[in-house]
Amino acid sequence: MKSRLAHDLDDNTVLRLYECMVLDTIDVLNRAATPFRICFDPPDAIDLVQKWLGGGYSYLPQFGGDLGERMEQAFLRVFADGAAEAILIGSDIPGLADNLISDAFRSFATHDAVLGPAEDGGYYLVGFKKNTFVPGIFRDMPWSTGAVFRKTVESMHRASRSVHVLPLCADLDTKEDLWKLLATRNERASAGARTRRFLDQYASSLERALTKAPPHQPR
Image (cartoon, rainbow, N blue to C red; front, side, top):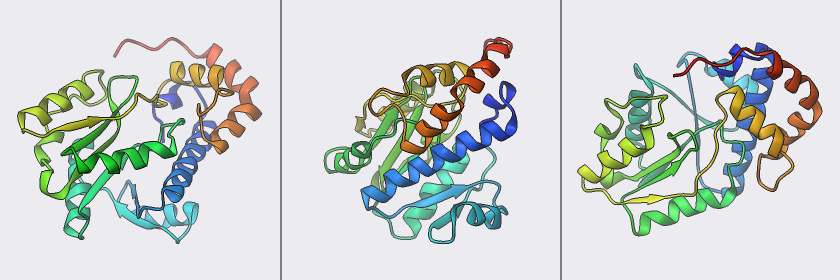
């Protein structure tokens, strides 16, 4: 769940909003008609995840101490299972568009890797071909800072990997992100259908809660 948003909103509201974003992401992947796995944590939560999303999907438990190690392990496992190329996508990208998935996979014809930069300085998508994957890319990374995308590109270049960069997208981590999404929710492609309906239905209560929330301390 979105822990930083949970500082400003009640847990149930944050969970329902997150559920909408996850289901919107799954819709995008279904329309892309490419095989995908749903990564989940903790690893022993498979029963809860299947109860929530259903048994019709392929699930992949996350293993590792930090985000980087979990991402590395996910790539290693899908490549070991026979995938020739793979991408990882965040589940908190309200405006994830169908064309970003197809663009990411098309880029493997001319590039070793693909990255989708997020507005906060991180990234919402990362992908490799099996024969160009560099596990060390995810190590010693200052996660949850505005330097992640830049440092990842630098690491890829040091490893002599060419990188295709996708369009910038916003993720949803903080109350400032949610304020912006509420203000732009009626713009084209600002959010998926479920997320947009949720925001429309609860806009007033969300705005009241965010107004009462204390300002965030600098990270």
